[in-house]
Image (cartoon, rainbow, N blue to C red):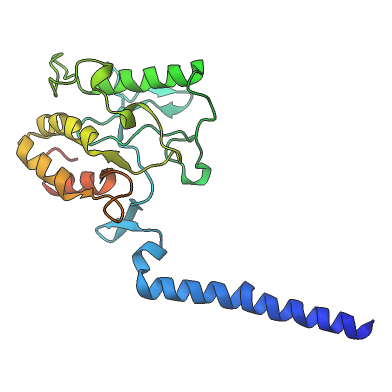
Length: 225
């Protein structure tokens, strides 16, 4: 009996050392040597400061200013809206939006009234963002829901997808160029620069990383704070 207990104890110790310490340290070490950036979370820095991750979506909003010139408040929190100077990521299914600690998706079927309401709201917001203060359309080709890309209307499976489709970015480029007083050619060139190809050349679709694209826009020195 005592011999069996000693064997069991030694087995637990050996297995714990091998798979509880050795294996994690080995994987971590290999990851740091071969692809340190990805192993650390694909962090993106500006001026030496971490501003986000290439793997996690990020909202680019601004405070809503009331007629009194002050920031509007609701339940003690500032009221915000999408900042037209920046490309906007796809809708997020987490609370708060793009919350990496609560990655999730809406568990509603395609015929759900909740799903329909969310899609309609996202589409309306996208069309509103394509409308300038003087009521003209930034991208004249997008006049109704039929012209809104799927990724601008629906959330991703993770709820925190950092990429948007090329079609989505191409539409938003009209607005960003107009608001920042940049040429459309310049903005389109940046979109192309931050467009990633399909994985292994055949999996998925090309995507545009919103955070890196917006940081590149700020580096142009036009239209940023």
